Length: 118
Image 1 (cartoon, helix red, strand yellow):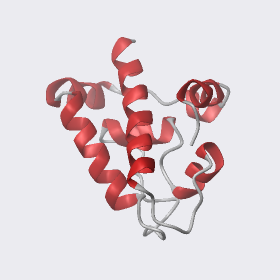
Image 2: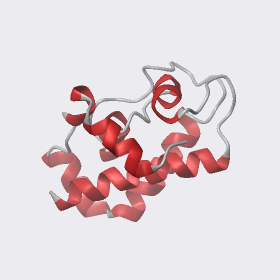
Image 3: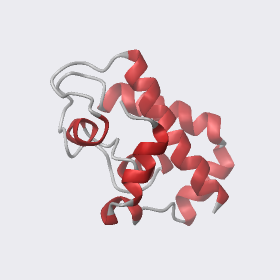
C-alpha cells in the first residue's frame, strides 16, 4: 500500500486516470445520498468485487459509469486486482485483508472529497 500523497501524485501523471470526473448524475447522487452513504456503498463494492482472492470477471468487474464510486475506482486505479497490484503493491491471488479494504475505501474517499471541492 502506498502513501496517499505519493499515490495521488503518481495518478496525476497518468493521462488515463486524470480524465475521470464525476458527471452531473454521479455528482448529484453523491450530493443527495451524502458521503457516508456513498462510502458504505464503496465498502460493499470492494468487499464483493475486489476482496476475493479470484474476483469474478477481474479486470472487467467495475462499470465505467452510473455510480460515483465506480468513477472514483477508475480514477484511483482501485478498479481491479491488476490495477491494485500495479499502483498499490497489493498482490493478486489472495483475499484482501480488512486493512487493505479500508485503505482502498480511504483512497476512494480522498478522490471523492477532491471532486466535491471542484
